[in-house]
Length: 437
Image 1 (cartoon, rainbow, N blue to C red):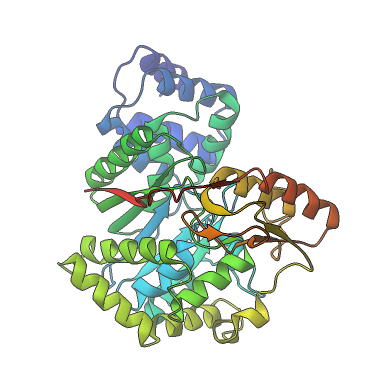
Image 2: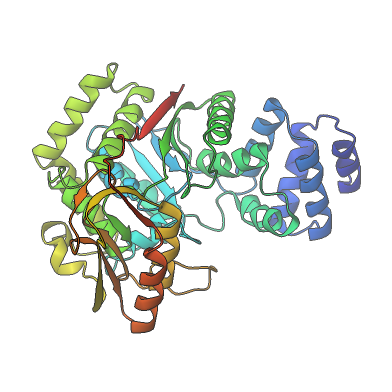
């Protein structure tokens, strides 16, 4: 089999076989195919989009380009969640322990933040000692013991994707729904899960800003996952404004812990997405049949302390102090310099733009522009006010934190462009727009 023949075949818009996709994926993973041929292949796929069947075959080929976890011996459903990313989207931090104590096995593989969107791994590592470099042997052991493990992608899990993701970025072939779908699902399929829930964001702070584009991606993700034998659903959620109150790493971890401690009222939007996501995971995993009953059950697990207890087990197993869950304010501290953003006039918060907030957080030190950038876990933003809230002149809207005064000023200057105040109260925004089954 020759790579040139595969490139030409796809250039001519002819369907590729699983064997051909496997040849490409293995060549990318092992480094036996040159970058220029892989880039040509990706561009051919970009110009002649993969069919639904081809997308599923390509996804499987990438998933099998390395090691694949297996939980065939698990006596409980194995499930995970994926989010296309946003600002303040720390749902996974609370979701994993919550659904684990609801009876699911959760091998949750996550990534790092880049640009204005945060990464789950960075948020977890804001807790001193938390180890995300978990080998398969440890993952199996932990899942068997407590039902959940939160870890980063290893070099052996879907290695083809890591190589091809970088080449897509460098070759102008990022915005292809089939290639995006395969990239996301190959990593999840490599986890050995049977059930997958996906949160697809739309809006200014999302990967895809237009609702219709996000919906098309959600439909392709769900239909492709089903072709691969996974039970799958997706939510379409609004990311025009940051989710919850916290933007950063330590403060997003703090917010999640407070939610698990039963303090839901301070961040109702975060709680809404958390509860809906968890309930949908129980439905697709067949642990619950009715969505309302599932939510009641999940709220009980939060109120009686079960979800928080599960988080403490995760912390203990993965090297962090379980006391963090008891006294989060003591262990998850903000950066030493603070500057408050106050209302310049009376009125209502009309909008707080998600992307601008995320970019401001990067300037503060909470995010990175390249993977080599160092994260400041204490840097970030805490939103005292959200859209629809009434404000008086001089009242605090947000608190910004940084460990560098120059970064604090730069972040503050950009953040000031995110907030819009109006004389009239804006209409309430529908956070969860649609469910794709």
